[in-house]
Amino acid sequence: MSTDMKLPELGENIEGGDVLRVMVKPGDAITKDQPVLELETDKATIEVPSSAAGVVKEIKVKPGEKVKVGQTIFTVDENGAGAAPAKEQGQPPTGDEQPVSAAAVAPKPAAPESAKAEVKAEKAEKAEKRKAEVVEMKPPKQAAPAPAPAAADSASIPAAPSARRLARELGVHIAEIQGSGSGGRISLDDVTAFARRLLSGAATGVGRAGGAAAEALPDFSKWGSIERKPMTGVRRTTAHRLTHAWNTIPHVFQQDRADITSVETLRKRLSKKAEAEGRSPITITAFLMKTLAAALKKFPQLNASADMQSDEIIFKHYAHIGVAVDTDRGLLVPVIRDVDEKDIFQIADETANAAEKARNRKLSLDDMQGASITISNLGSLGGGAFTPIVNWPEVAILGVARARMEPVYADGEFVPRFLMPLTLSYDHRVVDGADGVRILRWIVEAVEQPALIWLDT
Image 1: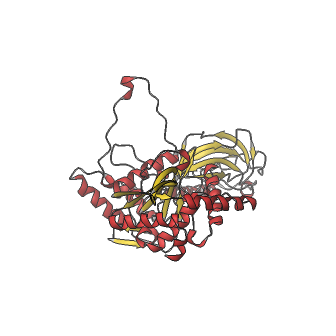
Image 2 (image 1 turned 45 degrees about the vertical axis):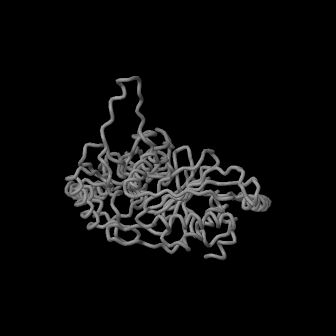
Image 3 (image 1 turned 135 degrees about the vertical axis):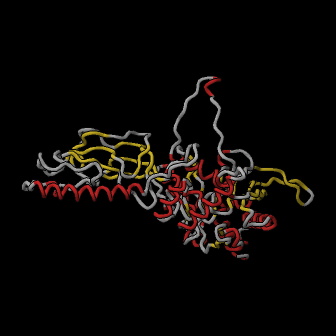
């Protein structure tokens, strides 16, 4: 008996993703719960297990394709290896049935026609119910003709199913709505209020998220050969979220330079100790993370989010720091939790482990959620100061550039000092300009004199 294996529900708010690798081929005997597909959802990679045992008959997806929850990914012959024999003339499952276990397909006495009809009707009713559940997770239909973000873009947005359904019906993106509930959860009222603002903005020619509507691109093929390639899940999510952040947050960029001559000497000494103990080397990022955790306590407005739905500022009482990691798939931001409660060695270990997980596609969605602030260190790549975009709904991000030895005039002479450029990008709705200067100056002084972290917080 052939069974359609569908992409199962993979977690809360995960609606689908991109196929990275098909781990089986036609003719392979598989067991239940065996990994059969590698899927990229939003910013995480998931191995999808088989829900049935048998022999793979036909594979209906291939690497690079987008799949949704409830979509058939391959068919399995449950009469094959690993499955109990099924009666050949038995009732075949409908296309929307979930795969059944080997015990469920064991031979049974033939049922009367009336009983078969009742079973068929019951199965059809269950299938329709499952269809409704799958529809609940489909990407929103767009009212505008412009291309819409993929469903995976909204995977990490907390929202009630009824709110998602209303958003689809109104033609709005759930990821663009700021939730007023606990943890930013989106309610029906949030969707309705957002739709009303869109309608009022349309009358004045303003597009979503406060920006202008996207314009159609010219036909580049008129000037030469071109090639179109679909965005990966990570690139789609990055493009959508950065556009949303840039259009939502009024950015201010404050720059300064920290003299890390002394702390660099300390870093090298601690790094040798860590390596001797078989631990991760101590990086300047670890020092900066410890400093940022202290800054979050000293300056509560740095550890906050703006809730424009209720005209409130949400202050957070934890110090979780996101660390931007460059990978072959794009930028990923794992979160190190409770940095204020950890020593420099623990921070270095956890940061190194998180970066390795990011590059090996082992991060989960939970690994990348809940940051208070983000740090982006491009120092290893070279270049000068840069202005990073705030990672909404956070209100600030610290950009770190490569440190250089420069002459500094002090006490009547020039002396060589190791100077590191820093940029604090922040949300002007929450952090005033004067406070932005004070915050970055405190960070600079704390990096230059780490004792300040204990004396001034």
